[in-house]
Length: 456
Image (cartoon, rainbow, N blue to C red; front, side, top):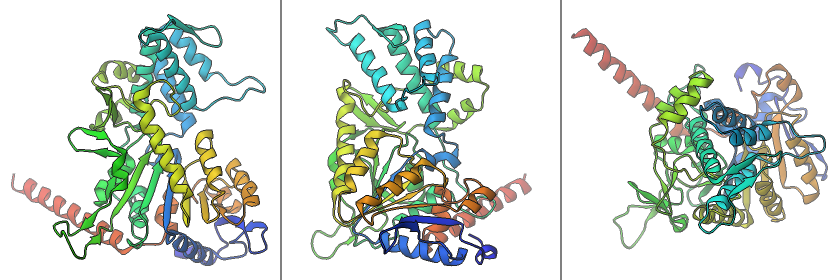
C-alpha cells in the first residue's frame, strides 16, 4: 500500500462477525491508511495467540510460476498424453478425466482421482491379485503394465510442473520474494509463544527454499541429511541455545517452525519400502517446461528416468501402505493442532476445494477459542460465501479480500499471498537487515566481477 493512496477508500474488505453478531465489513468507511492500521493491529493480536497454524494452498506458489490445481491437472495430463507410445487405454483414461462433467455430475478433485488410479494399479499388479486388468468408466480397460506406465508418467509430470525455484532478488518495486517476507514475519513473534505450524498442500519446495535462504530452522518430519527418512517423532522436538549447556538457563532459538506437507512433496521418494527425502537440482526442469508441448513430452520421457518413485501420489491412497502412514500421521497432526486452545488459523491460497481438508477445518471451528482468517483475492469467490455461512459458529471466521472497486481496477492484486506477506503483515526489522545484506553481497559480487574483467 503506497503513501499516495492512503487517504483513498480502503482497498480491502475484512468480512466477519461484528460486535452485534452480524456479518459485515469491518473496514467499511475507513481510508486506506486506517484500514491498513486496523488490519495490522488485528493480525498482530492474532499472531500473539498461543497456537499458530497456517494452511497454504496452490495460490501461494502462483507468482513463482506455480499452477492452480485445475491448471496443474490439465498441464500434467496433456503432457502425458503427448508422450510417444502412450497406450490407447491410457489415452482413453486421460481423455475421460479431461472431458467436462455431464449435467448434474460432480467432478472429484485431482488428488482423489489419482487415488483411484493408484488403487487400480495396486489391484492389477499386487502379488496374488485376482485382477488382470481394470475397467474404467467410459469403457477403457487397462492392464497392470499400462496402469504402472500411466502412474509413473503422471508422477514425473507433476514433478516437472512443481519443480519451482524461488526468486532470489527483490522485484522492480523493491519487494522481496513473498515467501521470504511471509516466513520472516511469521517467525518474528515472541519465541516464548508456541511454535508456528505451517501446513501446506503444495508439492513444490518453495517454502523449504525460503526457510533455508533466511536461515530459519525447521522440522519437516524427516531425520537425517544425506538420506533422510520419515520419522514423525521429530515434530515433538524443539531447538534451544546455547546447545552445549547441560544445565541452567537455555533459550529457545527464535527462527524456527514446524513444516508439514499434507499432500506430499516432489522431494519425497520411496526407497526400500521407506519414505525418504532428497532434494534435486531444479534448473533442468525449468528448461523442460520452456519447450514446446511435443518436445516437452519427449524430454519428460527421456530426461526424467533417473527420478525414483516420488511419494506424492496421492493423499487418499488406501492400498499403498508405504505412503499411508506419513499422510495419516500428518493429517492427524493437522487435526490435533487445530483442537488446541487459543488457536489462530491463517489460510492462504486455498479455495476449500479439497473435501478431506475442508472437513478438518469445519470440525476445528467447533473449538471455542479458535479464530480463522482466510485470505482470498477475489471478492466474488465462492470462498467468501462459504466464510459468511460460518457465522452461525460464532465470532471466529473472518475473510480478507479486495474491495469491489480495487478488484475491478486491478484484479487479483490485493489480498493475494504476495500482497499479504509484503504489505499487510506487520514489518520486522531483521527482514530489512537481511535484504540490506543481500544487496551488499550483490554489490560486492558485481565489483569483483568488474575488477576481474578489467584485469583481463
